[in-house]
Each structure stands twice: as C-alpha cells, then as structure tokens.
Image 1 (cartoon, rainbow, N blue to C red):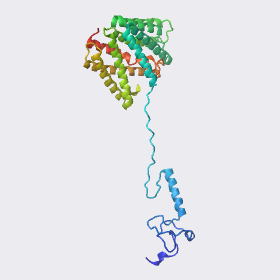
Image 2 (image 1 turned 180 degrees about the horizontal axis):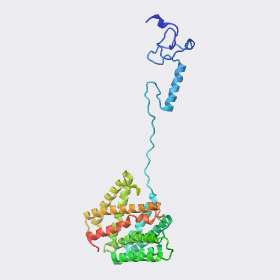
Image 3 (image 1 turned 60 degrees about the vertical axis):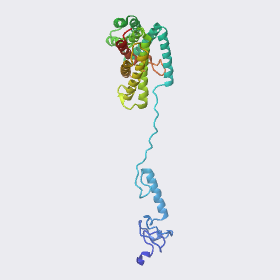
Image 4 (image 1 turned 180 degrees about the vertical axis):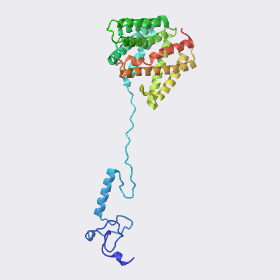
Length: 362
C-alpha cells in the first residue's frame, strides 16, 4: 500500500488523518471532516464513512419508515409483510334465552304428562287449547303481514271439534269435521265484502288443515288402549330429534342444510337428529309400546327425524314469507305456540301410521 492512501482527509473517510478507511458514503468537504471523532477502524461496516449524527438520523428515519410502511429496520434485513392480529374466536351463543326456554319446556312437559296419565279427557282439552291458540297466532300474523283475513271463529270452533271427533270416531270423524269446517269458512266469509274472498277462504282452509287436522292424529294416538304410551313416545321422539339437531348442529355444524329457508340448520344437525331419534325410538318401542321391537323403533326414529325436520323447515318458509322471526311471544324462550307445534304437527300422522302398521290400532 503506497503512502498516498494515508494523506489528508478525503471525501467519504471516517477517523483521524493517520487512520483512514476506504470511502463508503457520499463525499463531503474538509470542514465536515474536521468535526469527526477518532474511532477504531471498522472495515466491514458499510456505513463507516458517516459521522455519528448522520448515522443516528438515518437509523431514526429507517425505524420510522419501518413503522410506517413495513420496511426493513436494518439494511440487510428483508422486508416483512405487516402482521395482522387475528380477532379472538367468538364463543357460540344460543339464539334464545336458554334458561327461560328450559323452564317453560319443563313446565309444559309436566302439564302434558300429568294430564296424559291422569285423565285422557283433560289431555284432549290441552290439545284443543293449543290448537285454538295456534290458529289465533297464525291468522293474526297473516292479517298483519299480508292483509289476509282468515275467519278465526269458524276455525277455532271447527278445530276443537276436529280434535274431539278424532278421539271419539277416529280418522273418519276427523275428515267429517274437517269438511264441515271448510264449509263453515266459506259461509262465514260471505258476510263481508267480496274483495279478497278467495284468498281469505283459501288461507282459512290451509290453516284448518295445517293446525287442527294434523293435531287430530295425536288424539287418535290417545284413543288406543296404550294411548298414553303412544303419545309419550310421539312426544319424546320429536323432542329428542329437535334436541339432537340443536346440540350437534351447534357444536359441529358447518354445512348448511337449507340456507335460503333456515340458515341455522346444518347437515350435521340433521345427522344428530337422526341418530338421537333412532336410539330413542328403539328404547321406546322396546319398553313402552306393547308388542313393539327395537328394530321397529329404529325405523320410527328415522321417520320422526325426517318429518320433524321438514315440519320445522315448512314453518320457517311461512315465517320467511311473512317476514317474521316467531309466530308469537306467548312462551318465553320459545316464541309462540306455533313455534313449538311446527315439528309436532307433521310428525303426528307419521307416528300414528307407523304404530298402526307395527302393532295395530288398539
């Protein structure tokens, strides 16, 4: 190395004139070089030509740039993508007040079981009251949301008559009462102006079939010799199916069953309903129904899970068309009477028919 490399301070050097490093940064004049402080040679540091103040300013700018734009804090550090903190997982919540729902459910269950096994006529009265209240909820919502005035008086009287006729005369009595109720609807609506006559009586006939006529199959279940056991089996399987669908769907549900009708229902929930209902059906047929066997209970449970799910979806369609969440507010945590009858009503004829096929009608 010749002596010219150890001369007066030149641009880009850092240190005393006696110890100069190779230029690394931009040039500056001699006046700036006089303000530098003697420091040991650090030949491997690329910024050796900058003074301490410049280096501090640059570091501060780098840190600020890194904070603002996600750039590197150090020169040989690779830029990193800004990290986003994922939101904390949301705990699943039930859509209703579970305490109120459980309390009301237990209370209703106690009333039903007591009336079922003490006096059959009392249970028939319970069915008739539920039917009349359900008809009132349905017709009220139809008038509020669609302007459809289905006659409530003939519906209520005819609905109660259907329940009694089904218990006393079986399916024949139920059909006769249904026909007379439809005729009463046609005549009753004639007392009002003709505008909307067709839609009002059509909605009335639909309501008569949907609520009281389907409920007559519960009364026909009760008319058998082991009627209380048959009704209890019907109620248990429907409740267990709904419970299995809710529990499994809430915990494991990912794939929607019918998102346009009921977004909360999942395929996993349907599998839960089927599994729970089949197990309950096997137990009920084996231990509650005279002459029943466990394999018949498996089929019965499968059919109940299907009919209960379809009934729930059917009322969801009605409520979506009406633009409402619940049919009523009579039962805290449940909604209205119709919100509890949605899966029971279409399941009643299914259970009645299968029990007649499996063990007879009496």
